Length: 243
Image (cartoon, rainbow, N blue to C red; front, side, top):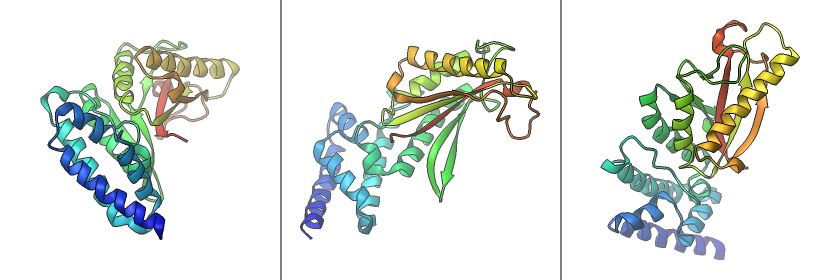
C-alpha cells in the first residue's frame, strides 16, 4: 500500500513536471522531454511501467512524453534528422511503445534515402525493428565484402538514426547468394557483417551497442527469391531493446 501511494505521488508530480516542461526553454525541454533524464521522471516512469494495475496512469505518461517528442520533431532545425529518445525512456515507455516511436521517427527521415522500417511483433507488441534499406537490404558487390555504391551512404544515414537511441542493441546478419552453404560463403557473410559494423562505428555508433554480428552464408535467402538471387548478397540490421 505504501509503495502504491509513493508511486501515485511520483506520477502526480511527474505529470505536473511534464506539463511545466512544455513552457521551458528549448534546452531544458530537450533534456527532460526527449531524454527522460530527470531522476524523478525516470523513476516514476519505471514504476508506472511495472505497475500493471496502473494502466491509465502509464498511458497518460506515454501521451505526455509523446506530445513533447512530437513538438520537438516539428521544429525546423530537426527537419531531415532523427530526434531520438534518450536514457530513461525505454523503461518508462515500455518496449513496444518505445520501439513504435523509434520506428516512426527513423522512417520519417530514412525514407528520403529509399529506406523503411519493418516492425517485428510478438503477441501484438513490437519486439524488434528491421531496417529495410531499399530492395530489402544493404547489398554488396559479387564475391566481396565491399558495399555497393548506393548502399554505402545508407549505412551512414542509419548510423545517424541509431545514435539517437542509446537504449537499444543492434544485431547484424551477413548473407550470400548461393544454392549451397560453403566455407567460402560462411567467411564472406561474416566479413560483410563485420564491414557494416565497422562503418556504423566509424559513423558514431557505440561499439558496445552492437550486440551480435553473425555470418549466415546462404542459410536464409529472402522470402520469394531463389538462393542465387543477387538480392541475397546482403546484411540486415535488427534493432531491439537493451537486455
